[in-house]
Structures are given as C-alpha cells and as structure tokens.
Length: 410
Image (cartoon, rainbow, N blue to C red; front, side, top):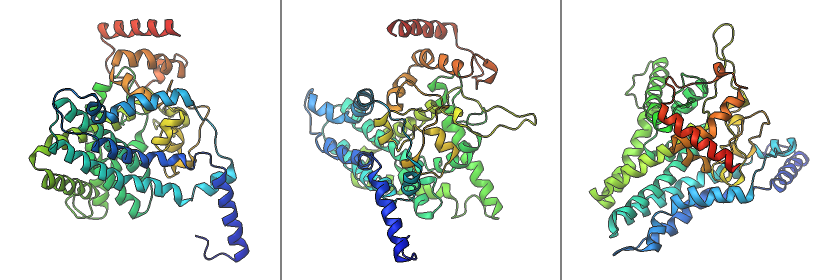
C-alpha cells in the first residue's frame, strides 16, 4: 500500500498507522472471536465415552450453550458498555488496517477444524442422546457465528472475501444469505417487504418460517435477475447460489465419508441451529421499526433510528460489533473495527447474547420490547411495522402479567 510513496511520505503513513494502532484499546481483544473455535476444540476433545450421568462430560457437550447464553451475558453485565467512537485520525488509519480482516479470515479454518472434531466425537463416542444433542447444538452455535463472519466478509467487493463468505456459510447450508442480505435486506430493511425485519407483536416462532422461506425466495429471485442481465440462465456456473450450495455439498460429503451415516443427525441439527441463531439475531435487530414513506410513496432512506443497537462490550467483541447495526446499514462496506455509535439509535436493554433467550419466549419478549417500540415512536402506532394479527387474549394476559413483574423488579 505504501510502496509507491516517497520515503518521507511513506514514513509519515507508517507513523500514522502505528499511532492509530496504539490508540485502539480493543486491538488485541478482537482476537477473542477466532479464539472461540480453539476453545471449542478443547471442549470437544474433552467429551469422552460415557456410562451413566457424567457432569463434566455434559458440561463439555453443552459448553457452547453455557458460554453463549450464560457466560457472555454475565460478562456484559460485569464489564458494561462502550459507546465511544474512534477519533477521526484513528478511524481513517484503522479502516484500512489488514490486521482486522485477517482476524475474520482466521475464524473460518479454525471453525472448520472444530466442526470436524465435533463430528468425530458425535459419531465415535458412546454418549447419551442429550449429550449428542448438546454437542450438535454447540457446533451449531459455531456455525451461527460463522454466518456473522460471512456477513462481515460478504460486504467486501473483492472476489477473495466474497468466496470466503460462501465458505463460512457452508456449515449452516445458508449460502443464499450473502445474496439476500446484501441486495434484499439492505434495500428493504425496516419495511413490511423485508422478510428479515420482524414486526411488532410478531413472535420469533412466527418470524422464523417467514424469514427463512422469504429470504430463500428473495435470494433466488435476485440471482435470477442478476444472471438474466448478463444473458445467463439460472443453472449457469456463475450462479453464486449454486456455488455456495456446492461448497456445502462438498463439506457434507466429506463429513459423511469420514464418519458414515451416523453423522447425518449431527449435520442436520448443527445446520438448523446455526441458521436459526442467525435469524434470532435478525429478529432483534429491527423489531417493530419502520421506515416511513414520502409523498410519492417511496420509503425514506435508512437512518440510525431504524435499527436496535447495543454497546455491550463483550458481545460486540465476539460479533464484530454487529450490535452497532445502524452504522452498518448506513455504511455496509465499513469494516467492523470502526463502526460507530449513534445517540439517536434505539438501544436494547442488553446485548444480543442476553436478548436471544427472551426472544424465544414471546410474552417475555413482548413485555420487554413492546413498550420500547411504542416509546420510540412516542405512542404513534401508525409509525410502527406491525404484525397483521393482534396478540391473542391469552398472550396479551401473559404479557401484561410479566410486564407488571418486570416493573415491580425495577
């Protein structure tokens, strides 16, 4: 990058980059993300043949769930939030620092190794069904985080990163995400037209089939149009959907060849859990938020107030600052290390990792989030992206009871 500069200018560039690196307090902490699969290796290899109940074995098998839904939320509470933005000189230098992209690249092979270790343990160890399930779900969490890695790389313009994004999506069989997210979700976010934007009073369990099926249909339509503009058919070798699915087929074939038919439940569970974890995060990110239409019936541009954000430090370190989602939608190609906080963005009560479990429990979710959506729009229900059906009387009653309990707890 600096080879064509005069020596004195090259020195200035290197000095500025060195200064910026010293001003990034999270520089080494970003290594936590690719470190996670390495921790997974140790936990997977710790799973042994089991006769009867074995607490250590069960903890090892379910380590991903304990880590994601227990340890990370606890650290979010202890360590707290970070709403600081990088100063402008540091921002400009870090934006092109290859160190951060290498971290995202490193996650992919490390996660693949974890996947193959877990598949071997699942098929070759004598385990009770609940520990086999835990092992597959723990692997699925890694596959879900791999989708987030693909999200970061898929927004790059070069062929290498876009190919690596498809490789990262292969374990969860979610290769279409790179197309639908970039060209569908980013266009229609926070509107009823977007299958990945959840609606007020829509439960996660109603949202899940809508976003999975709708996202796949959208990706196919987008890729058909892209290929048609180039006078190519859907089954052409340049179809990026087919390329992604081919990588998945090759990966699954390798797992089957190494482990036999006993690996099939493992493959299915980890893939299903992996992409459902991604969709649970989608559910959090835009719940009830709506871009308004102008006098000509066109949606306004996407603004910071169209994404739910969180500055919880630990979850952001593991998710490449995905929680600074408003800045991502404003600048899709902006790398994770320089994403910014906006005061006008609506804030979740806690980090994504802490909010996933409430999202699985509809009355708890509605009790926590509905009042926040209404407050965000100052009580104007016409500005909310609403589900087409109101809550049932039973669901409304359960939601009201939980809300009263939460209010009493403060």
